[in-house]
Length: 465
View: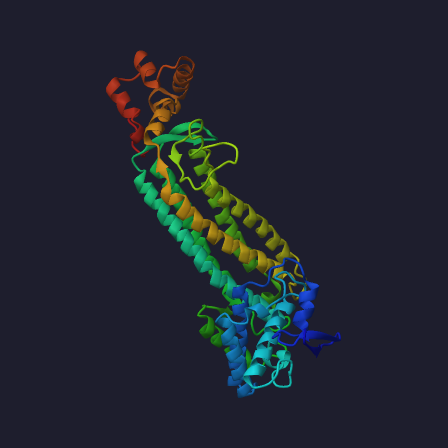
């Protein structure tokens, strides 16, 4: 393999002659063989957007030669459009607070800019990764800003999928509104509820998740670009600091703004903890819904069997005809993983020391995964489960009528103690609640028919004793 020799403060290395990355990227690649996964494609785009904004700003204020700036901008545009991503070879989890990722971007952009200017890769006298591409920047403001931009790119898809789920649940709520079933508390018979009400409740909690995720965007809209090493803006021109956000907003289309305290924003990651917490809350709600659907569809002959989930695949290699609730199962598994990611994110944020948090790589790696897997899980939940759910209306009524839970409706009329006696007697004798009340002459038939009407039990109403 043909190579070129590059040098840094540690020594020299042979870099593949056709590589756009350089020595610092190569060192990072050799040092951090951790996940086998490279940095996220959208993080690559975010890094290129920052480098482009910096080049434009430094050109505007006269710090960077126009030809060099234009070549850097061209290289950045190519990366933003999806080119050269194979040259970003550092692992997603890396030591150094993201320096390897930042230098990977600096070197790839510099070498492509060198080509644009007619030079050969590795001739940093034309365009230097640090002096030109990284001008007025530090890893410590570039990497967290790029991470936040990536989150802002990922959240809309998650929100869109959750909105689809909300709408699908609301449709089922209307479809099932006239189906009465037995409600359950602690997995025991409670009081009647309409199946549509159950699905409306599912939709309501998803609606709150959507609102929380929309609000969480504000947590990552405040960025520390311009703060450089520790938030004091060392080596950054004041005109650069004044203009970098404007140019970055224009390039990204994101409504970002400069943190009011760049020192705080460089060392504290509580906003990212908050976003992760919001994602985790949503995951918990999704898993709860998935659990309920598995219970309601259980059996189908020996369980509750009140609803049917779409049959997506054979459920067993040994039991013929068995169909498993595979979509709710995968939703719960994604939720478990997100909960684990959230713990990692909490620990990474807590581990920051003094003026910098060096653990952003693992934090972003897990947070990106949480947002993406949430999006994918919700997508399959909607398309392969929710929209195909059907109700077993007759079975719901059978279970309701065989239950003594309706005795609760008698309490305002004959008291809790007497209602409990009636329920206990019904369980032991098999005689219905209604017949026992009539046999004892406790309530007239017409009034009892009204009291024990299952539909009336699912609506708030005035009680006449």
